[in-house]
Amino acid sequence: MKNILLMGAGKIGEMIAIMLAESGSYHVTVADRDQAALDRMPKHPNIATKMVDALNQEQMDAAAAGKYAVLMACGHVMTHVIAPAAKKAGAHYLDLTEDVKSTRLVKDLAKDSETAFIPQCGLAPGFITIAAYELVKKFDELKDVHLRVGALPEFPSNALKYNLTWSTDGMINEFCQPCEAIVRGELREVPPLEELEHITIDGLEYEAMNTSGGLGTLCETLKGKVQNLNYRTIRYPGHRDILKTLLHDLRLNERQDLLREIFEHSLPTTMQDVIVIFASVSGMKDGRFVQESYSHKVYAREIGGKMHTGIQITTAAGICAMLDLLAEGKLPQKGFVRQEDTSYHDFIANRFGSAYARSHEVATPVVAAAE
Image (tube, rainbow, N blue to C red; front, side, top):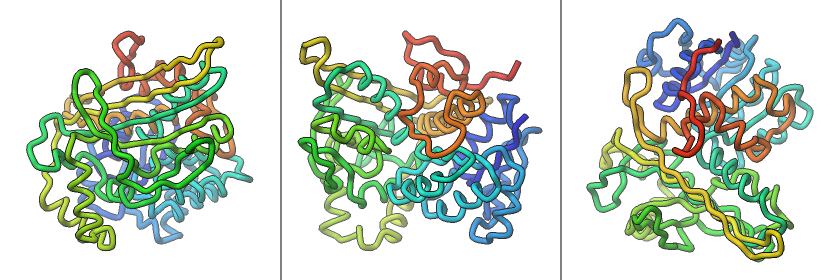
């Protein structure tokens, strides 16, 4: 049984702890500086809790010592202390960040590391990168690669048509930071919330707009190989215009603490969400100009006797599957590991990655005990 340090006792951390503990392959120490959050962790023989202030180097080093891997399920602002502590302890490092600067820091740490550093292991970036790259590999020559993901309330009931289902800080960050893209063959930064498009998936109309971080490392991987590459977040129609009013007209992009307070006071959370995943690739294959797409939806459901949201399930399944594949030797064992280094088929066949399996794909339980 491998010993894991999980930094962050929030909703995603809880889901990660449950999945890993119930697999029978991992003992998880969940660390946080919030005792109330730790008290909410499920009671399980393979889950322990520990009060740790990551900003206290002595506490952080002690928590990471002797661990097979350190998983980060807290805000990207903590990357600069947690990732170096993992390296110092000789542990593998995995995180869920969508923040571009944080990933660059992780990449620098990985250059001379004897362990693996695997950032962006969630949904977007994360699984969407793996799914899109599986399509990319089928083409002889690429023209357009489009990635689209939305974590949406199944039953929207306000003007924003949105409920809080994941990190408020993460949501604000992706709508305020510049977005990487490849436009007509050139790597560029494009503004968030722009290039609004309307798309229809399974007969339902959505809108999608630029947001930061969803491409992961694909810009670097596909530079010089694709004409256009972009990532956009899916929302219900009308959401983008209200966000622009809040962020730009009312200038709340300059007062993000206030914006977070408004969202968390005004927008209810929901357990009834749907994760919409869509990727489209066009280019030349066998002398013909063709397009192939990937589409899937994941809904909230019960796991371990408790209801969990779709965003909890998909995000936790991503990082748990990457940890499992690393432990099985199916990923590089040291240095910087990109999401696109992962085999889509290995991921879907994995006991955690199977949370993403579509009906025509062979699916195993999300959590299966070790033999």
